Length: 223
Image 1 (spheres, helix red, strand yellow):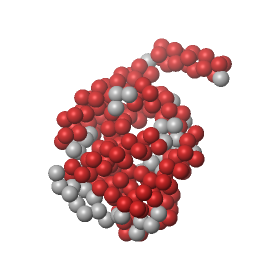
Image 2 (image 1 turned 90 degrees about the horizontal axis):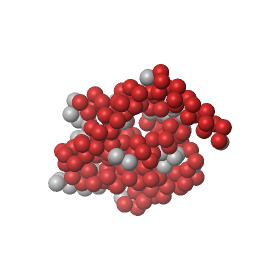
Image 3 (image 1 turned 180 degrees about the vertical axis):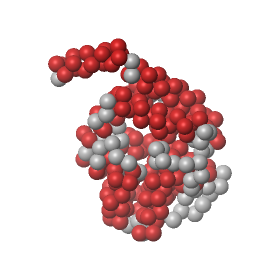
Image 4 (image 1 turned 45 degrees about the horizontal axis):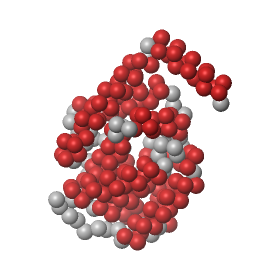
């Protein structure tokens, strides 16, 4: 395990945490999936991965805290949509402009839809934490419906999105960058992606689509 001297004071990290936590509480109804429960999980796991791979832990923590503020700006949006709000939060909390630009780059690098095999250590730590949240066995059961509601997607759209963005990365061997994370969580990731592949096939079946339409009709009458 390698260590690196932090470039952000712990007081500033705490200020960013408080600011993001306030936003998550204020707009909790808009963030049923990407709320504080998600942010705090990713922040904790990303810090651990950063300590392991020698990345700047404080920078990774702050990147994790602000990595999903785009969902406050625009539903179902890429990380880049949150750049202005992210920079505003970082500036208000005293993060130097140079470090804020670096954090913004880390967030973009770590995004599942566009990340590559060779990204920075800081982006690897953030990516592994965010990816783990996706791969948790409880996520499809407890949280997937929250993602649908938050982003205005159908089950078909979400299944196609997950399979389209994640399966190639998984098959090419860099779903997780951290070797220990890969050894520990790859079984979960494989099962999760197999589930979503099955869901994708199922919702494209006309009979299943008819079933889902009937279920939605019942839900609409009950609401």
